Length: 162
Ligand SMILES: CC(C)(COP(=O)(O)OP(=O)(O)OC[C@H]1O[C@@H](n2cnc3c(N)ncnc32)[C@H](O)[C@@H]1OP(=O)(O)O)[C@@H](O)C(=O)NCCC(=O)NCCS
Image (cartoon, rainbow, N blue to C red; front, top):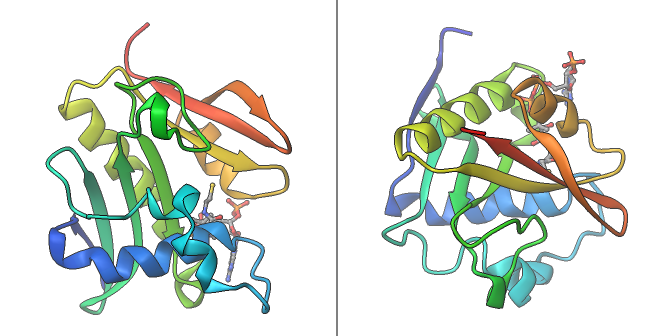
């Protein structure tokens, strides 16, 4: 679509990223989802203090308004995320606002974030995806592979080099 633009995320995007974090945690779209979940350490550490010196991300804007985001943050073993692989591999979060889904914004955000990671010369980017989430298809198309399993989720990794 011609009215969609992509730009690097900035520190001003914290509130929108928090909205997108809620979408990622509530990917099933449960109407009784409690936003207080985002205050728990295991969720908050994906966004608290945005934006640190090593955070990076991409924002999709539709007609000038934020419509989706992909971002990556390094979480150490001592504060590991659901998709932890290594301290030098950041973990990705991806979500598109419900009213903008189905327009290929998600795949474009993912590709742009993967490009950012490549330019930073990272070894890879990882994430966790629960069983049944159609986002898995996007990740596989982008070259992510399963490297671990935790409960009902897989850990996926996009390696930039062997
Ligand atoms: C996963 C997600 C990022 C995909 O973004 P998107 O911009 O909708 O991506 P696409 O447009 O490529 O659509 C993805 C699939 O959903 C289908 N779809 C179409 N309309 C849709 C709609 N209104 N809502 C949801 N999905 C739709 C598409 O057909 C597509 O399937 P296909 O690839 O087989 O054609 C988005 O659905 C989302 O934010 N989900 C909730 C958060 C989430 O799960 N994040 C990942 C956590 S690991």
